[in-house]
Amino acid sequence: MAQSGSRPRCLSVPLNDPAAAALFLRTHMKPDDLMELILILADAAAEVLRARRATETIVPRRRAADIGR
Image (cartoon, rainbow, N blue to C red; front, side, top):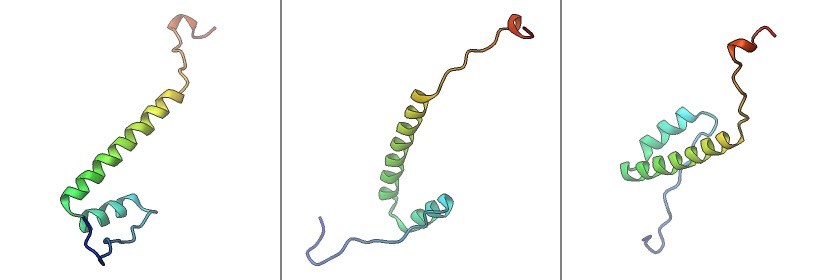
């Protein structure tokens, strides 16, 4: 719980370079907080992959007998 009169710790993170953002966060976050962030991002990534898979069109494979027709 935050103490009265104290402000949460905030920093600016570079958003144009994911590797730089990751290094910055690794350097400035506590290990437990970093692990929580990793789990949140992993869950978000899984949702993106599920959504992508749901929208992909499935192209049937051509049989060898159909090639050249």
